[in-house]
Length: 501
Image (tube, rainbow, N blue to C red):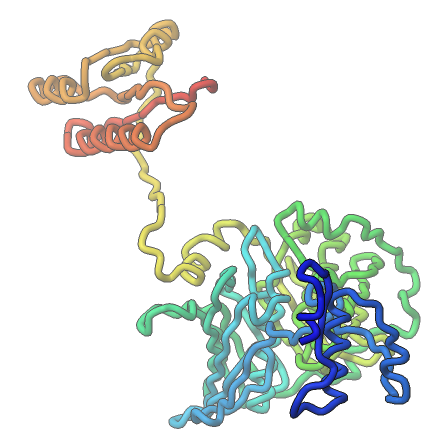
């Protein structure tokens, strides 16, 4: 009604302070709120006088660097017992099952860079690899479950490549104990979206036993740190050099903070970054921390020190864990044989944490990561792949007078170049014509080398031009293979780029 008392062009905002069937405090507060959001200046001290109200900071904006929202990257763990399984109680494993027909055990889990984002920081040759130290952690956890406190041996047979999207299913099998209480173990994986009959890839094979190395035998003289008579190592650019060698370690794995050498011994201090310390307690020994300790093997002063740079663990022997949840280690590494080292680790007080009697490290190649074993692990459902098979041709004596055959239109000038080099050259009009001539005269031997010029390839090619060139080469190769007269000959298809001769 108040609005009817104002002129039509009056710029005003009206809101009721008294409303029927509504408490007066609610009505007046609503009116003040409406004025405030429209830009009116209010005396908030007067509004809240006597109420005890005070100013508070608003929640952090979602995209600021201060955490506010719930972390959804943590793995979702269900009630394994509800489906007849036991809980493995480990970040990398989900369920543990005692086998009904033996005293063996079976463990399963799911790994992905979405649920375990720190794994994405271990990249080798452009592939995300499960660290070899993670296999050790899995084996030790499984050993605890069956009463075995020593990892006698663990050999890594194939790298486990994690996909950028989706995950992999992991299985760890523990066999029956023998007369001495030792148990075999194996680790397998396959893509989570694989068919039920898809092949599992075995990544590791080993043996668990009882009788861990006594802690008293593990500790080295860490009372004086760094050790006496040791020389400090400058680590400036250390991880940049590894990255240049296709070893892309993220912050969680860049734990080597200091190192010293004394003869062939290497002493190192490694630590987890602050954001990973809280997670260390869930592991026996965090894989990233132990992996960082292995980085110090690249500093060995042995003859193959350069080979140590960019090597990965291959075979573990005599691994014992004496304390859990470490976030910082002092490590001693010493030679234990060809390509092998021994490793002992203590905490900052000198108390034993872990020991490795022997560890063999080997270089890793791109073929191992993308070849048969690893490729099947990451791409089980791939339909096609390229596989080159080397063909050994019959030995042929070198002959400067060897006849070269250039087939078809020679837009590259091959015949002229061969003639200029003093070679004998035959120039049939087509491969079909050459086959007909050889079949008509079986007494004439087939040429040792047949050259097929295809002209110039390069520049802005259309898709149709590429398809035409592929069809042309395919037809020529099929015709060549169908002619038995070329059994002892070699075919060379020659082309060149538009600007590169």
